Amino acid sequence: MIILGVDPGLTRCGVGVIEAGEHRRLSFIHVDVVRSSPDISQDLRLLAIYNGLSEKMDRFAPDSVSIERVFAQSNRNTVLGTAQAAGLAMLAAAQRNIPVALHTPTEAKLAITGNGQAQKVQVERMVTRILNLTKMPTPADAADALALAICHALRPAGALQGGEREQHLTAAQRQWAEAAQHTTRRRINHDRGM
Image 1 (cartoon, helix red, strand yellow):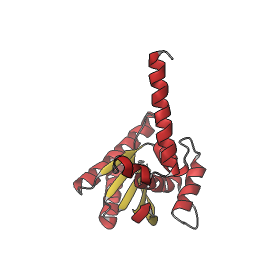
Image 2 (cartoon, one colour):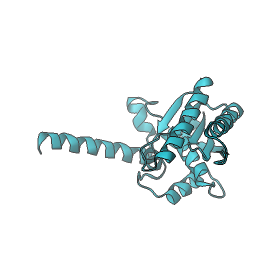
Image 3 (tube, one colour):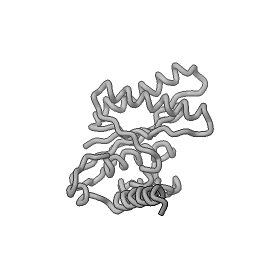
Image 4 (tube, one colour):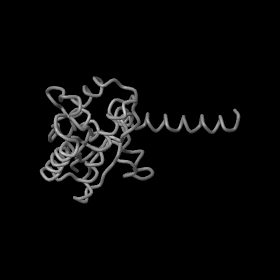
């Protein structure tokens, strides 16, 4: 399965492409950054990002597109541009009938490092190791796009059922599941007044 990861941004939009083979063996295919100049109008910037993402999807024909889920930030202009770029990635995928998955940065960190609070450099090192790269991908947007693709390969959100899911869990996935169960138990106990 070919997975295209997108780290959305209006100035730099990271794109990473991997292949998830048998037994979730991951292979590097491509990494790049689609850019738009802050010196041109907003509509032309959006068009540049859309065209770049469309070209990548046409070139690599992914089976799935994994996009960073946009979350609230203190800088409204940054979150607006990020949300617009994410929307363009979803549109380009939808026009090609490619399924889209949204993953938070915490999910990606957890899937790759086993720690949802991992530092950026830790994620970059693990991306390099998982994909057997000779050097860390740069800029950070490119590494983040690969991390999102890897996250989707490791945590495809409900692709496996029941016992089959248990057999395929990685250590990071088990830790994530245990943390989610712990949080749920804590919330239930709190509601019961325990």
